[in-house]
Image (tube, rainbow, N blue to C red; front, top):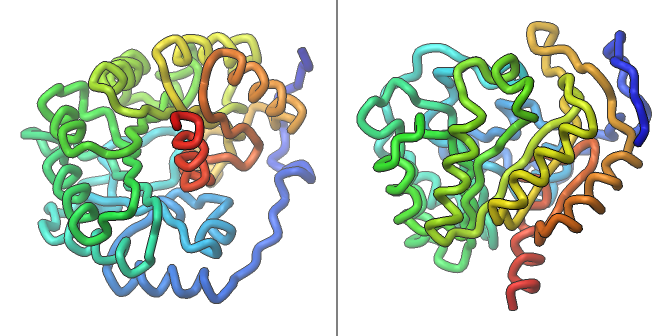
Length: 295
């Protein structure tokens, strides 16, 4: 297995350099999101693939506002005290999905630990329902928080019957507390198990370059494969700002190829592995591949 030394400088290798292009479809997607007063994780999390995805008229819509109650060391979404829930957000989200003529949509959200009754699960369920009403031919993927392992909350989302339920494990267990101090690795593992037990097609993802080693990555992959996860994504962590956790290593594309080969051998149906892979990268193509495998 290839050994890679920690990176002392923030200079990115050539394989992480991206050519930025703004197309007409990018501007059209941007216009629709602005007009409907919605947020996207593409912008809030400074995703490196925003130009590619928006150019293909795909986006990950972020509900429950743009302010998170947690402060994970890798994430550039702002933290603080969120605004009150917008009860019309599900309707506007459904309208935007319809206007974009999407065949597949990914919905995510900030953590809302301030909403003690259900941590935002009601808005989640209503958003899924509105998309079903306004865009009935669109498949729905949800990338949720952990709802603090409150079963009535995440089961409300399960009952809304998304086509794909996703929750990210984010990193290997050993470094999880340093990476996500307000979250719990076992809690994430538990919600993934609950989704599978409910009978949902389930997806997760993780980052590398945060202090783990390849043996730990493979061990984590095996643990989640054993749960029965259908789709697995793995990509390079990139430091959003100097205030976030530093990159410990830049993982070579050949290592990502190895991850993919190992993951498929572990039983994942669909695997996306590469330096620029993120949670929702090519999600529309992933669901098509999963459908073809299941059929």
